[in-house]
Image (cartoon, rainbow, N blue to C red; front, side):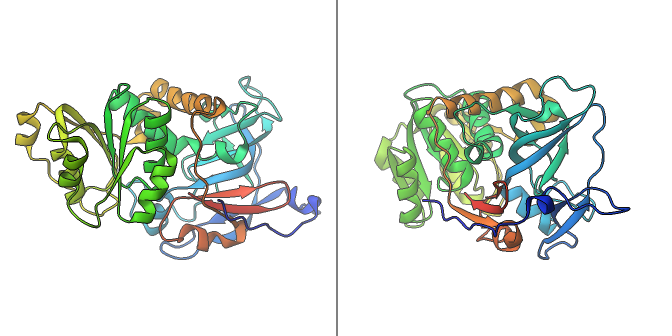
Length: 354
């Protein structure tokens, strides 16, 4: 169950941006002014929207592992200081530019914003906005772009997972891992083995739909998988850990199995022994979710549309861990290094931990 922290009630005139004689419209934003230091909550001057832009009133904003890394200076993208983190958000359209016809004021949307979503409002290209179906709450919608976009791309586009196949998911209790378990089980009808580092995490993955689990904190992953599926192995492995866990997952593949490299949360990038690829005709492929936005936008867009559709149909159910206020951004971003979400509902802001 989500732990919710509610903000104090504030005068609507203040939240609808302080303005006085000689001053413009302002909104609050979380700013990274110095790497590896707490985020600062500051008022930022609002600028006019250009003809091809949309202004969105942000209700929820995901805090992903990439946000944590970028605030430490450890991400491949290095925005110029100061910057506002936040790659994904949900909210309602406040204003559209004169050339925009795809959305209108009042529309509920999710957006993929790069690094500027942790604020009361966000100006964005309408190309990277998707309308939220009526039955999908704003809070759940904000969890879909990064985690579920990655899961759908990994399973459907990169691994071409088929119904009935066996899927091994490492770091299965993380945000991406839980999304992979959810999509593999409840959309693709695959048999899921969830691998995680504790019994508590394994239990969470089982609640999401995994048929069996492996606690690799208690022994080798390959041998544990063999006990579950036999010497044949698994058809698909989705790995976000790297290092020895990746190598064990690779060795767990069946004939013509596929492993998708999503990340290196364990901190070690393993070298791929090419002989393992040859012996069982297996494939090792990579997945950098954000790169699809520039390199193959139709595929990128289709995954988000699918995520919204699956959520509307009740086939997936994003996990929500906890909620924090905007003023607690430091607590949220550094909350055990886990992915999180920022939330505002009219008069308060909060964070949600995945």
